[in-house]
Image (tube, rainbow, N blue to C red; front, side, top):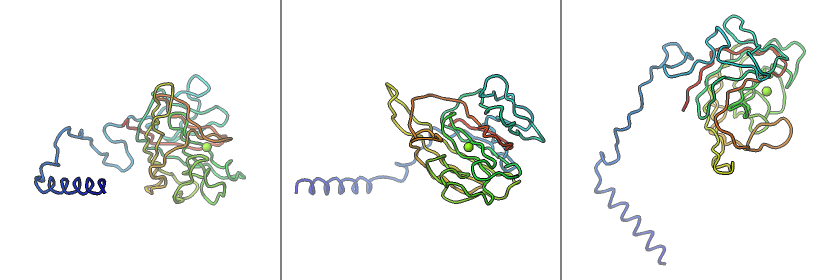
Length: 242
Ligand code: MG
């Protein structure tokens, strides 16, 4: 009974406070969000983006096998040279907004996970799958747009083999406290070709091929692109620190 009276009192006081308030009481003017100039051409980097690949060279990247990135630059795109290892950014990132476009190579006789497989590894650890999604059945939590082995995309937004696919990824990095204890898990939103396919998905950990996901403490880490043995192309890669 006491609890009910208390609750009623709280509600009444909230209502009466609201009645006394002006509209201006819940409006604030500072801090002002910084002005950012949007690009005039769709998908081009906005004014505060770090351009990781502008169609010219791999100067922002290194090989995950050590040394210079060994993939090719062809017609304004990065093309994987199978067997040379992944590439990782020289710069380290945490929370970010990432734009990246990819094109699957000709299917040839490849099927499932062997057809146009690559991956976008946020913080070198958490994979957003890159795969040819054109009539290419595979496990759905490993299809294009999946958080690999964790979450299938909400819808299949891939277009056609040979067409550029456009990813926009919004990444909230995991936070680790003392002793490497997980304080808040990673969260991701993924848009493929303008269609929301992962909506604030909370990751269970890393994205291993075998076994269950787990978290291991880390700080800012490079963005990594996977060499999975096929000549996937990438272009127009830019990132914004959040
Ligand atoms: Mg992959």
